[in-house]
Amino acid sequence: MSDLGASMACTPRPDHRRILTLLTAFALGGLVTRRLTRPREPRTQIGHWRSQAGFNAYRAAYDEAMSSLPAPDRTQDVRTDFGSVRVYTWAANTHCSTLAGSPP
Image (cartoon, rainbow, N blue to C red; front, side, top):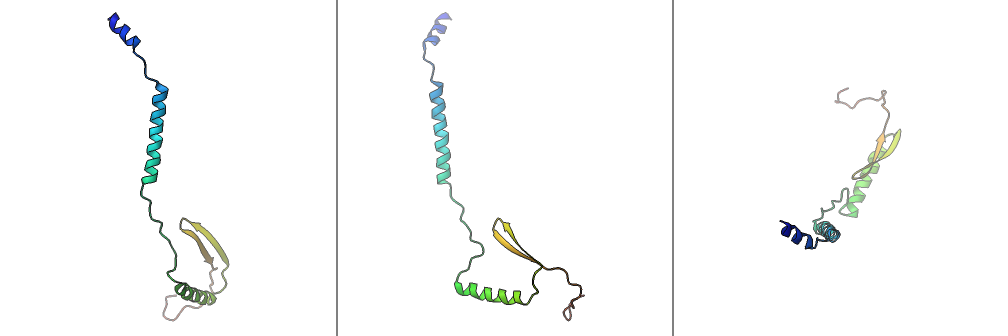
């Protein structure tokens, strides 16, 4: 057994620092490769107009509808994951009449 122990003592030990460096390089290379080759999710565009004429028609109808309403008591812009949303708030009006045929 002493011969076996002597022969093991003479074999060179692997350089642990070099192995660790190579493993780290391979891991980082794999992460970079995965990130670069991963298919990207298509960005969906929310709230876009196909034409300027379509936007103009919408904006005219929107402005007409908003002009028929009383001025809002509060206007607030709320940020969402999809962009900013404008919120109008009106105080309850207890002195208004209901439309003909609508429930009170």
